[in-house]
Figure 1 (cartoon, rainbow, N blue to C red):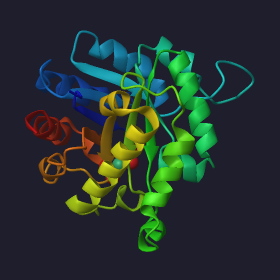
Figure 2 (cartoon, rainbow, N blue to C red):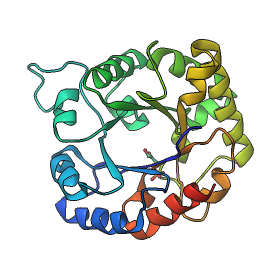
Figure 3 (cartoon, helix red, strand yellow):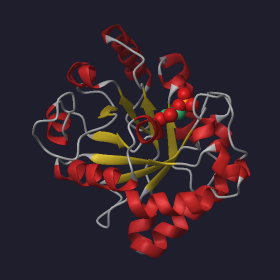
Length: 249
Ligand code: 13P
């Protein structure tokens, strides 16, 4: 049985004042609920971990460097992330792939670095609108999966997030059938590559305009094990009902 995971990606949208939303969210999340994770900007990682100690909410980073240390001004390493108390890191988000030219091989290297520091990697993959229109979605997904997910992936060290780029921050979502098609495809590819037991343990999240009013339907898909949520994770009042819908799915 895969434990459901509701993950919030705060992107570059908050300062320390927003941690009050975390405290509020923590009041509404019980240990028996879906696993809940928030990924704040890196300057807030320590403080977020401190504020959430003893609660059911985990903290993750939004990126890390592939090297453990060195002359990389402005970057943060996986051991630094782990040192804050964070336990997850999002890698290969489409905004990193697009705006920072990260390639599949970079994402794989970062993933190995994350594992080396004891972090669980949330590896993001997803097609652009043009890819989907050209009927290339499954080809893109297969290529990204192969290139971004290293061979030593397990259910403990890896989560995969399917985020169609055209659905991120747009209010547009794929149809339930489209989500099911891609998630079933990812599961099948993982089974081919890692074998049934390992593949069955790897959680698959859907991301892209998940909101309180569409979450329950998305969570009916068998191979959707949770969500990676941007905008609707910023306020406890929006994220709590999504966590609840996932817990009840
Ligand atoms: P939105 O939920 O704001 O569409 O963002 C999705 C996302 O990019 C999460 O990583």
